[in-house]
Image (cartoon, rainbow, N blue to C red; front, side, top):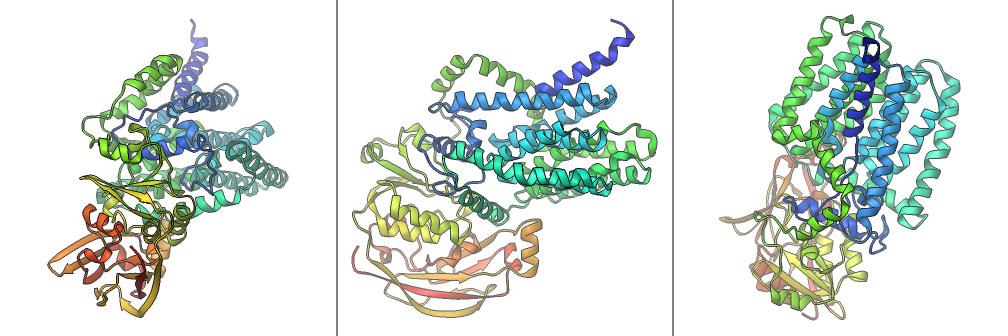
Length: 630
């Protein structure tokens, strides 16, 4: 080996390391600590087996191709998933080879890029997903090459080909990809390269919808893509209300410093007339969306922002000729990296090292190569001992038998561990975050509801297990009745015909939402419907950040209050309020057709930091339920 060979060896080493980091091979067993997320993964893996259609039978944050990138060993999902993941890996290797060997990037810049990709690697394995971020990395890489290296149409066409699959994996990822494409066109327009702007726009407008439609037909079995996109927009737009959560204020400060430092790097490049400043147009949407994605629900999700910042930094460093063009550049760079590293490690712990080193990917590759041993390991696994009991008792299993069953709980993997014939609601896990989605589940229960319904007294974020979706609750009351009550679960059986239930308006009034309201006296159960409207500040916060949580307190007496988190938009449907169950036994009484046997609730009040984001006054309507039968 001679000195002359060192650059080639450095390029090869960078390619091999980055190629390992972008390996998308993933597969999972049901024996996970996180039973909530494992549940939606299980539900999405059932979609192809049950021939369900996205947008009609399933409305979720992911799309019809997503199950291939978090496959379980169910049916042919695992094998099909590994084939799809291998195809993505080949694409990633092609793009990285183009960057490393054909783009004339100096080895030292490639080394900096490889380090940043390693530090950002948790974003490629985040919460059973991450493949959309790998494809976004490919799109960002191609976009930067098109701007700062000779414009090659093969690179542009590959960029366009990558956008439709992202749309069918995760819709928000497709929005980011389109933002990157828009930034590319803006940069070309800024350079007055109108020929490529016009030609590229024509090709993009023709190719992206057509390829997306063909891919959707192949994966979802229908040409009707409209309902899928509409459902995706509904559930994504309400995410900032449904799952909003605050965290430590110092984490927000760290994020603000990282964001300011990143903007500062581009300002320095612009003032020094460095050509790579123009990348800010392509980087803007990924960075801004990652802020919202990370801090709408400020928990482990914050890793998304800090990892995205490091990923974009790595792409920026690819084209930074010298760090000496501004004396503050190295200091700002080190500040940004140090804060991002500390923030990611604080959330992930020292397990972060297994991602950075690529060791997790090595294990995934080894498991895929010895697939029979991996499958045997999955077969032997059981739920971790720290989890609640996931195996149902004998009487409950006997009552369910071979009948179809739905589960009214975020924990859907009861079906897997107990070999139940699960039928999930179109919008599972309480994600019915507005009236429209709530009505979709209610309509499904009326027309296609399973023969049995398993109810668990548990909901995400302290919401009411039954009251979080009022229309769904009313539909269950109409079509289901009590069969079996156990300590942890309630089993309902489907009726031959629905209960004859009718709601009559009792009174309508306008209230101050910061004050409580007495529930009227009535011999019949009462429902309440409330039309909360966001204030101008609330509408802005919903788009840019999130709406903090809001609570509803119900009480039979002032000293005995039960408080639940409530999604204001769902209250547009009538909610049983006068005899709302406060435990599983009370729920059993309700579904036994005796709602008034539960304690009468006398007062309802709204509170919480999210209240200030709504109009101060709200119109509410009380309705009386009349029923001729139990």
